[in-house]
Image (cartoon, rainbow, N blue to C red; front, side, top):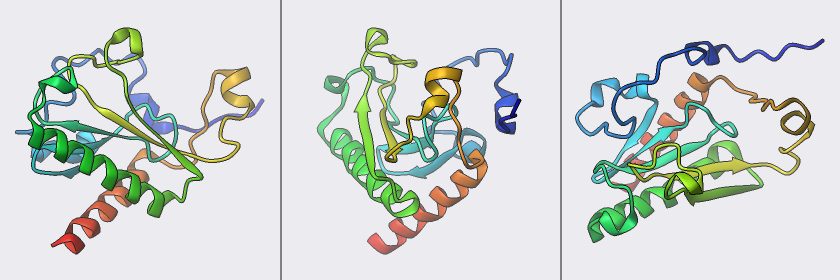
Length: 165
């Protein structure tokens, strides 16, 4: 038997469901490392997925607690999708994926785990990344610790923001 090592998962095994919305972080900038927020923009931010499909899986969300796109003012919508575009470019640079999945799950029936606060998933993908493990063992293998991924992304977002000025 072979073992898969994923030590960051221990904090989630048997953990009680947290109160409140994980995306309502506007006034919690002191908790960015703990919440795995890697970038804060004017109206939106980028947060790593704590249960990623692949290394580098991030979510881009507006600060406002809204469930649908029609609930966003135009300037928030524009900032949200500029941040999605920036996330795509940074993930390409940092992880060199063969492709990316970018999308919204609006409503529980569409797969939204947090349907009250819309967010855009940006997931790096590589040719062959859907191998036998998820199919036969219901297990996804991630090659890098979440904290290492967070450090890479935080540096890349910081560099991108500095070069934009």
